[in-house]
Length: 333
Image (tube, rainbow, N blue to C red; front, side, top):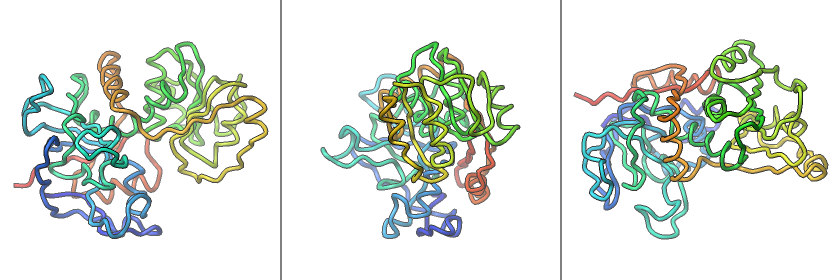
């Protein structure tokens, strides 16, 4: 089957080890289900894998991809309503609770131990298969698994914000920050965002932000929580912007993970720092219901054919995106 895969790892030239070509079909496993992939989105995780973060050279070739939407290939007998031919989205964290794996297996996301989603077919434990929200296109649904689940968990689990709270979302434009703006607005939060780009600030306002500021700008008032995925470039601003007793929920560090900690401010003002990696299967189920009920639609930056994966990955590497980059997976003749 056709797939996008890491042929090796290269920290300095990740695109140099990115390949599009034939890979083996997934083998049938008990309590796992096969999905015929129609679309998959590209994440920073995919680039990090090419760089050797979470993926060792001896694990390659490895099919990339942590998000997908597609067609379920066989019935799941214990899941009422999920029949062969159903449009579905997978929860791609494996090993969080033993579903489909041996007890005690370390949690991984697809493309680390098990093959990823950027292929004509992918597999996940049957318990991780969910019906696609009816209001979404296949492309939109392919954006949910990593960025949108992470944003949902950051806001409502890690930061534990409530309607009426004020939240600062650092770095408008990325997949997580874009999702967080839309989710926070739909949940009745006041939403502040930052970006160095005037165009991104404008677009953030169009999708639900109440105010948008230049990166590092002084805010009108302190916020109840900060959603942080940028890292070193915005960390000091995040610490200064959250109210005493507030929360900084962090899921990434795209500009570096070694900022000054500012420990005195953190302990003196009782600031809580909470890390977050994606979210639970239960969070994913709630996210899907929320997206459908509130009629939310992920922002799609651009769409590429599978054969053009290098160009799609290039957009992520360059950082010039607003929303999600999606690959169309067409079955081979």
